[in-house]
Image (cartoon, rainbow, N blue to C red; front, side):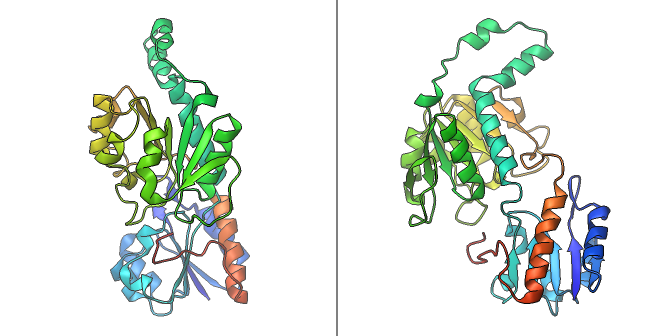
Length: 325
């Protein structure tokens, strides 16, 4: 079996050579190829049975002759789904759940930091300003009086909901599968077509849904206008879920109170982007999934799926290609 590894999106989304070597040691009977340069990708993919990758365009897919399965080292698989592949029998799986605990912790950290104005405290610390009066002024409701709307109740959203409920907050969720089992800590679940209803009551909105055509610009001008002036938006999912121009306008005008953002439409976020300069925004550089050893559990999951694939057993985290997650 020929396995091709193609995970090279600098500066950090690049699989270390040491992990590729580990794959080769773990799969001694297979040919494990590794490609980094874009020009070499189509040729490397031509005879691949399995791809371990994060992206695949239509031209690259057209070069494949015996591809049966693609595993993504990420959760989002949009960049791996050209239309012809969606219509094909090629199986796609992802790394959902590997970093869910870390991402959920990051989301809650953003919520608590913004509630307590810690981003402002850091700025005043850098300027050696004793900002006691400034930090005293904002009214911060008790956690028990705070309602959190978690949009997306997958592995990340479910953990965010449990953490928030554990802190005393009331949690409402939004998800497509209304007949799914109840989740600990979630007091109410709304379908996507009632998102505006949930936004109107929420003090905190956490986005934890995949990027699909259905979720593109999920939070736009109408949704922001429907939120409380004191509300907070936290995005630890994908940048394209949010209309960034509309968000910047809403933050400048006080339509919403603040935002904690870990994902952006263009990354790195351009230096001249308005979001950088807004005092009511806390920005992290798409780092929610970082907690030391990023790659080992990703490769471990891939190896587990290789063993399953070889036996013809069900794979972990198979993606519905039509839905995109």
